[in-house]
Image (cartoon, rainbow, N blue to C red):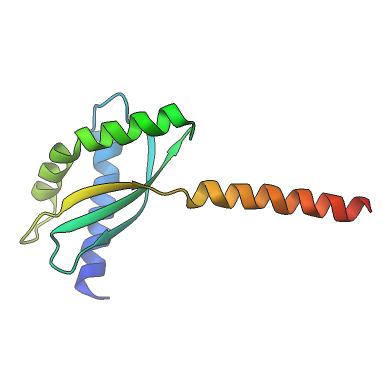
Length: 117
């Protein structure tokens, strides 16, 4: 397994633990880290996340809370993960789960129509 992959997995794990256990921002609730991409020089990490519930207010509050907590999270990652550069974090909402649920609903509806014909 390449080193960059191992580092990304470790960052993913540590960041999930930090958000769940140490982040005190009330705007950040049920966040799941779905992926983490890191640049080759470890300067930036794009963190993909989902939120429950996924209404617009919760999504906006969570995005604001994560953005405000970026410095804290980067500092904590720097203490937990020993790499030469602690990456700057960029949080991106992952809508793939939401899209998957929409597709599932459409497939079920189509199957019901077929079976009732």
